Image 1: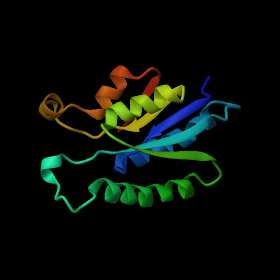
Image 2 (image 1 turned 45 degrees about the horizontal axis):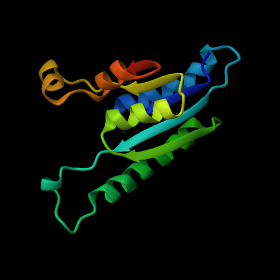
Image 3 (image 1 turned 60 degrees about the horizontal axis):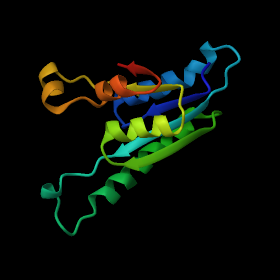
Image 4 (image 1 turned 45 degrees about the vertical axis):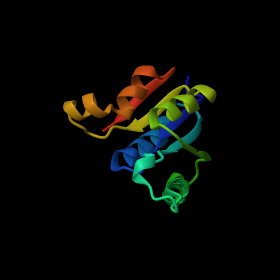
Length: 139
């Protein structure tokens, strides 16, 4: 049974698709009314790439907060919880899902090439491989 659904949201087109998909899931599960939460991760830039007088993490967090405001409206009659965390995206998503005993994680998959995935890694791949719950990737 689905009691808790988490949506990993990064603002991409596929993240919006994943959000909409997750909102439709309760309709497919007759009588289910799972708790839905959103987790978004602000990934701080490399130290070498940042000027000393700019708080990039605060700026990115503020930008993400503005983006996430629209999700509440998009969800309309659903009561959703929105969480922002800072750190490595896959690690923070996995920590949130584990700490909150989520039954399912829904996230968008950004299409990257096999070479990019090998060199850079993939958040979706890392999360799907290590998550303690069911993971649905939305393309």
